[in-house]
Image (cartoon, rainbow, N blue to C red; front, side, top):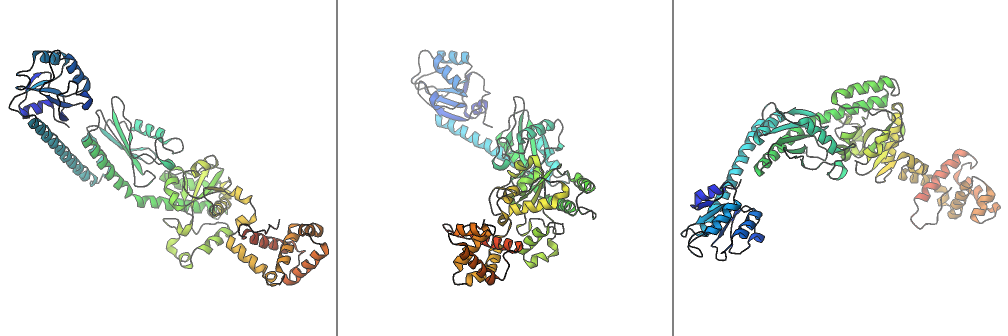
Length: 539
C-alpha cells in the first residue's frame, strides 16, 4: 500500500497548513502550470513554487481537488516568501491538504523520500506474500490437505473460503462462508449444458471469475491443469483484494490444483469401474445375453457410490477420440470398451485387424487407462442431449441411432463404424448407412477383393469392353436390351461378351450371389477411380 501523506510529512519535514494527512501518496509531481491537472492521474503530491499563482486561488484549488491529488506543497522563499493567505483560505475551504516546503528543502529530496517509501512498501508486500505462501504450503502438508489450505486461506484474506467439487457441490467451507450462494452462481455461469458464460471454446471455464458485489468481494477459480475443471475454490472478503492478497489467492490455487491432480489415480480407478459397467451392459450381465432391466439396475447401483449415473432410455452411443475424454466426461457416462465385452463380431474383427498381435495378447491391456491403439472412447447419453454433448468434443464423433440398453452392442457398432468413416465432425450412422453399402466396408479390403475377383478380365486382351459390358449388365439388373442400349451396341454383341465373361470368371451370372459379389467389386473399382475418370457406378 502507498504511504500516507502523514508518513511523507514525518519523513521530509514539510509543514502542514490545512486539511487532513490521511490521503495516500502514489507519486510526486512538480508543476508551475496554472492548470496541471491534464498531466496528473490522482493521488500525487503536487510541488510548486507558485510563480504563476496570484490573486484568486479558488479555481486552481478546485481543479486539484477534482483531480484527486493527495496534497499541494508550496515552496517558499522564491516566488512567495510565505504561503499566500488567499491560497490557505481556498485550500481550507475545499478540504485540500496544503503543505509548506521550507526554502532549504529541495523538491528532489521530497521526490526521493516518497520513492524510498514506495519501494519499502513494495518490499514489505513481497515479504508478506512470501510469508503467507509459506503458511499455505505448511497447511497443504497437513493430513487435512486441501481442507487445511482453505482454512488457512480464509485467515490470510481476513474473510472466508470454500472448496467445491467438479459438479459444484460444497466439499469444505470455513465459518460464515457463503458457499451455497457461490455454488448457485457457479451453476448459473456453467449453463444448462456445461458451456461457460464468458468462457473459452468447448465450454472451458475462464481462469478466474470475479463475483463481487457492493458489500462483498468474491473470487472463484477452477482447479486442474486440463480443459476439464477438477474442482473449484471460492474466497470472499468484505474489502477489495490487494495485489498481495491476489498473490496469496493464486498461490492457494496452485497448491489446491496440485492436490486435486494428485488424485488422478482415483479418477483412473473410476474410469476402470465405468469400463466394467459398460462391459456388464454389453454382455447382458450374469449370462442374460442382453441388458435387461435387472442388469441396468445393477449397473446403476455400481455407479451410485461414485456419483455417476446412466442416462434414461432411449440412449445414443457416441464414439469420440481419446483426447476428447476430458471435455466430455463431466457431462455424460464415458468409458473405454473392455476387450472382454461382447460386441458385434464385425466390429471385433475390424478392430483386431488394426491391433498388432503383441498388443492383443498382452493381458495387461485388457482394461486400459487410456483408449488403446486408436479405440475410441464410448459415451452413453440420452437421445435428447446427444448432439449437445457431441459438440463438446473436437475431431470426429460417431453417433449411433437411439436404442434401448438391450440393443447396446449394435448401437456401439454403429457409433464405431461412423467414427471410423474417416470424416471430420459429427458423423451419424443413419446418414452413413444411407450412402451405400461400400461406406460400411474398409476401402482397401474392398479394392483388394475387387482386384482378385476381376483379375481374369483384367488379363484378357479386350478387358475394357468386358469390364464395362459387365458393369452395364449388372447395373441394368440383367436386362439385355437396357444394357445394350446403355453401351450403344447390339444385344447379340452383349450376349457374346457376357458369355466370354462367364467363361473367364468361371461363375454363373444368373446366380444372385455372384451378381452381388460382382456389383461390390465393380463399385469398389469405381470408387477407386481418380478424379476425371469416365468410369461409372454399376448401378
